[in-house]
Length: 350
Image 1: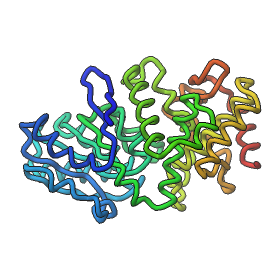
Image 2 (image 1 turned 135 degrees about the vertical axis):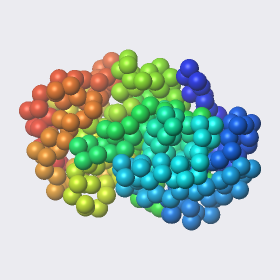
Image 3 (image 1 turned 45 degrees about the horizontal axis):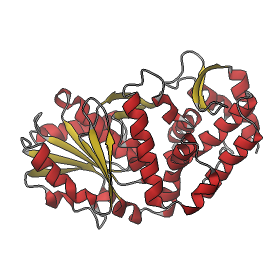
Image 4 (image 1 turned 90 degrees about the horizontal axis):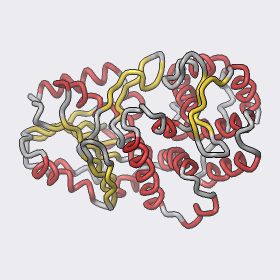
């Protein structure tokens, strides 16, 4: 299965068992001037039985290891990767390959964007979040203390390969957490909860990729507002992730945070009279189907979360959320902090 991302320079997302082995041939046929491929991955990913795509290249190949998860998305990690690219004499004709979860594909994409002002990047996402969201669309970034994804660039990949074999080795928490992004896509697509019973994982990933490809093609650089819809659940979700990282507590997975953010957004939409109780119940039912926790962590400090959300990149001196409405989803700006605080306090007590 191939899904085309129809941009000024289009590319394809390949889905299926074993598609990672197409990457080497793609380099030979489409990036024929490349002489060096640098694979960005993590020690854990490198130990997986399916980590064998380096054998498919017939050019010089180097592997650079970075941390797993959000720990990879730092300026120091970016510098280390760029130093490695320099060490391996990467030129503008060569290629960076991100192999890992969403954090690693973000880092690999950003390094490719800034090194020599741009080299080709190929993405092989190995987590659910990576396959349905992070590796597609060209948004690359790292985090700083002030917020998630505040330092980054748009840099579209030359191709993306979503190999279902990589998902079979995920632990249960990672698999379930990744479904937070899938649930978001299911709701954005307007699909009813009842249809989930017959949906396979491959079908869910295909649906999510197709939705993202369509939205990205319509709004590559976030100029029309349509791409903002993909941030459904992310205003609160990103704030929860950032606070968890700052406290050095057990890391909250991105998909877990998005699921909580989606549940909150449904309640905020109801408070603003955009939706009724039926929509909130349907939202909760979709999240429950995937086994996602949709309650706010009990130790969350509401004022701390409010402060972090105020720095979200979607805001313009006020709070903005992607919310459901009677005519579909929309980015809703200018929401009063008192309203958000009231709903968040109530949500925390559920």
